[in-house]
Image 1 (tube, rainbow, N blue to C red):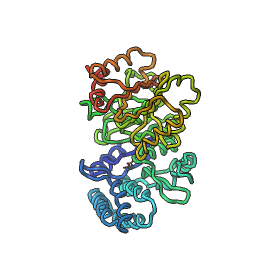
Image 2 (image 1 turned 120 degrees about the horizontal axis):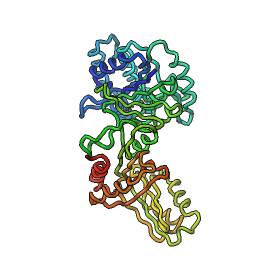
Image 3 (image 1 turned 30 degrees about the vertical axis):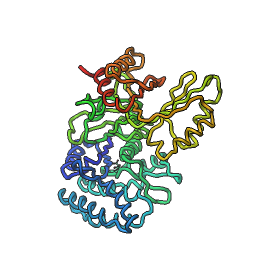
Image 4 (image 1 turned 135 degrees about the horizontal axis):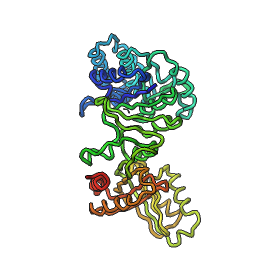
Length: 438
Ligand code: ASP
């Protein structure tokens, strides 16, 4: 059977929910339905999950969450009415309000969008509803308990007689409180259920026709990616391709269940298939091009660095003590650079960090540079094929871009280049044209 997850835009309006219904009813194998909270209906609209976080904030600041609850109530009551459902959404929203007033973390509030979405979807489909809190479990330390969860999914979902609707995004701690995954985490819930019930495919229904080769805001109508491996997906998502939560592959890769990204608003489009391996498919040299701005480099020079055993370890220990995760470590004979994300550096005293590194390894020179953009050119097709690097660097040369950093993993799955942020858009366009232009 198939597990289908529907994202926020698929759950946003009565019409989109009816699209979901016809997708489910067109294929009897679509038995498990995971839903997100209703998302935006138009660009200035507010996602239900954001309203719920605001409701928690409102209660924190004023002792009441009435303003945000009123907005949330209107959305759900209207949805149920437009769909002609005989459910008292007011009663459900009252419960949510009372729960938020009692809760001590924002997670309960945040999870209720998915919960109420599932109440509506199960009524529309005539499927039973299984509360994610009954099957998705976290350990005492707050990490996801994958094995207990897998056993519970098997026990409660596998032999369900009817179809099941399950809210995404959250589970329960051992003390029964609600805990959510990171934002976009309903994708992860879908993958967990797909593993637990042994689905033949995990369909992830969203509002685009799958992954595109690159960012459509930078390149006009980039090509679609038809097939992608789990590894390529990780690389592209990590570097900014935002269609699917990057952790979603972990549950499904255990049993090699393919993920099919589909479009609720264009259900006949095949979308993108994400699989353990793309061997045997006609794949291009480059599968995708992704990137992100907002990186900082710390560069050091020291004569005879190459002979100084422990140099890198000492530098990395300083970063570890400061709780910093590293993106890349390009090195030369007497030079070492560390690339860090600006997001990770937030709140860190950079002068103190540099002083700490000086104290640890006494470099001859050390400097910190901001505004680096990283671009990843990803694809299994580049292994053993000639000319990929040449095409890439020629494209950057043609665009008049100075390359600040180069990194290629030994798996030949990607080449990462660092360019100045001001050159980012031109670089992506030129690289895309070089590999995919006519
Ligand atoms: N509703 C949650 C969010 O906005 C989770 C999800 O949609 O996957 O992040």
